[in-house]
Amino acid sequence: MATRAAFSRLAPALAHARSARSVGLRLARGYATQSEHTMTVREALNAAMEEEMLRDDKVFIIGEEVARYNGAYKVTKGLLDKFGEKRVVDTPITEMGFAGLAIGSAFGGLRPICEFMTFNFAMQAIDQIVNSAGKTHYMSGGVLPCPIVFRGPNGAAAGVAAQHSQDYASWYGQIPGLKVVSPWSAEDCKGLLKSAIRDPNPVVFLENELMYGVTFPMSSEAMSDSFLLPIGKAKVEREGSDVTLVAHSKMVTHSLEAADELAKEGIKAEVINLRSIRPLDIETIKASIKKTNRLVTVEGGFPAFGVGSEICAQIIESEAFDYLDAPVERVTGADVPTPYAANLENLTFPDTPVIIKAARRALYRSN
Image 1 (cartoon, rainbow, N blue to C red):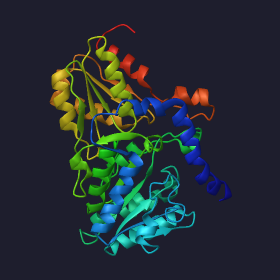
Image 2 (cartoon, rainbow, N blue to C red; image 1 turned 45 degrees about the vertical axis):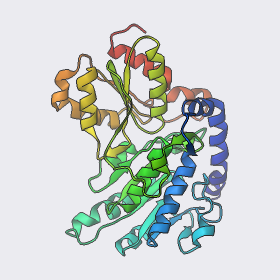
Image 3 (cartoon, helix red, strand yellow; image 1 turned 60 degrees about the horizontal axis):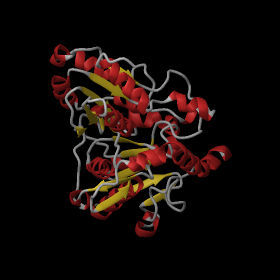
């Protein structure tokens, strides 16, 4: 328990150090547009929760250090002062316990936002998430819905080794009864989190620690407190005609960077931001394949039984398979427990050059 408590305060500093060293400048550089408004991912998540708590007094936040410490990653900063201890609730270090409390309150008519310090720790509560939250509506014959959001950082962070670097998108994506969201930009985070809070079903909301401090442009529409994005609908971030890159979360950044580099070679890559893992917007992917005739999936998780694997299976089973002019390329994390050593960790997860190589292979270009 002492180790866990110490980690909760060290993790933000570790993430900041890594992001400044290896990804921060690169992530930030691409999104300074002429938009009138900007927000960091952290600010967008915070704004979404505040707006929904103002809109509906049944919404509350529960989790470790969400109140007095303003959240381990400061995502809930200021909400305790605005809404008080009855609606921003600090808990002991017991994921199964406070997840169960949150689920029980959802059965009772409230709309909890259950924050996990990371989804690696949510493994302690996976029975509550999968069985209690995900299945009770069905098992009660539709009598007992569970309107709850489980949110927190997912996937690799920085220097936190094998047990704290896992991507759970495909884990939760397998479960009937759960919706699974994996946002990328600030607009994604705000619009999708507000929709998740209003949804009558349990939603697993997978954020990325290394994206929290990244600033994105925000449209005037997204700044409104009525802004919502539909769960289950992907977004084409960049149109192209030669190859389709499908990614979610931080991998959208690397896919867009790869598209920039490929454009210098005359290759027009289309980049799809999945946004939602379950339901999966396979129709948008199929429409893109019919135009580009090539597909590259990109994710930070393990290769076996991953999101890319599911996309491949659904494409092979559909009419889109007939439009492919090359085998599907899957870009994933390495099939190893994540190393602690920084030099090995940097080799474990996909980056922009790896995506470029995969796209060239799909186009039968030499590497």
